[in-house]
Amino acid sequence: MRTYVWSLPTRIFHWLLVIGVVLAYVLGEEEELLNLHSSIGYALGILMLFRILWGLAGPLYSRFRDFPISLKNLMFFFKTLGNRKSGFIGHNPAASLIMLAIILDVLCIVGTGIIMMSSRGEGLFGNFTPGFDPETYKELHEVFVNFLIIIIIMHLLGLATDFFFHPKDRTILSMFNGYKNLEGPKVKVNSIQWILAIIGITAAFTIIPYSLLNQQINPENNQSEQSEFEEMDED
Image 1 (cartoon, rainbow, N blue to C red):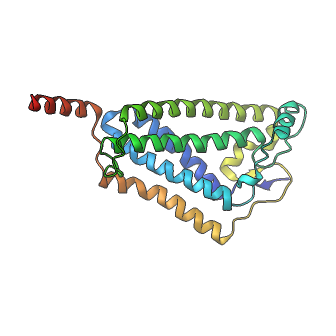
Image 2: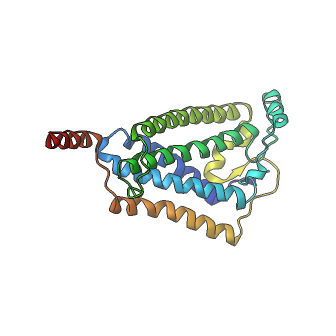
């Protein structure tokens, strides 16, 4: 029996997160593209805020209260991993922890990026200079990025493990079509949830061109040259 588990907004969020994280990581390696990198970062921040609201007021299986997070569930999950059919229709205990870790870590990445830029007088919040050392937040930013890579690897290993032990569940395919080969109540999205999803996803898209037009991020090498010129002028 097939059960509709992941609603369309949930799947759109998932793939926007995947695309956004990959693009932000790649663009972050090029100083000339930091403006676009930060713009995608804002979009990821909005997606995380949307996911938090979705976890509080979203449909079945996407709500945080439906996450089977407990020591008992976690021990049962790993203890019986290889000799049972999956008993979790939505997120299993391990996947629930991974999802929460991704949300928190991406928020930390976005937050440290915003503080780093605002400390330099750049970005959408450049007028609210906090007076912090930007290098400190740059290092924290990189630490959280590296931690996200570890989380993603764990997530991929979890998917591979699930595919190996429970191939008939079609967990990977469910993130494309929304269906798992499990028996249970199907997910339904009401009108208020649709409005929330439309607003959240639209805001994530809209912030990219808005920030590109209303902020300017200077590459670090240009900042260094500018600082040297300023020091020479002072001399």
